[in-house]
Amino acid sequence: MRFVQKFSNKEEWSRRQERRRAPRFEIHPLVKLTLANGAVVNGHLADMSVCGALMETKERPFGLTPGEEGVLSLLVSPGSPEAEHRFLCLVVRVSQSGVALRLLPDVTAEQQAAGA
Image 1 (tube, one colour):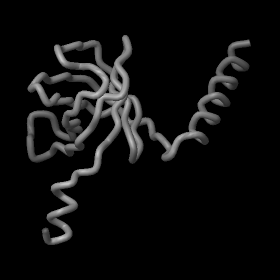
Image 2: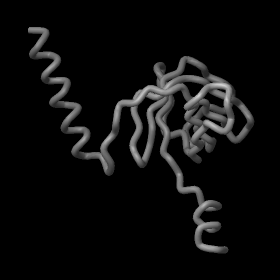
Image 3: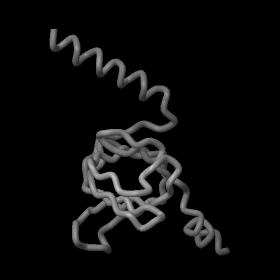
Image 4: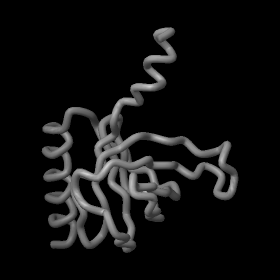
């Protein structure tokens, strides 16, 4: 019975993947979400795609609401700022287990690349 339940969950997960714009990959690095109001949320990723990420955390600082913008930092080597990868993002959903984020285009980087 347990095997059947696991299989049906994988099947459901597979159907959800097909509906997504981009496939999600399970990765679990430590991350830091810095909100526009200066609040910081620490946790780790559950999964990530080119369009978004799911961050697992129990922290709920002021301002952690859908629509809030921030910067998601992947802490490749914790304690070393030069080893962070940063992504502009938008909080899409807040649940008991974490935060769903939409990754936003970095307009500044695109302008610099275009020579603006």
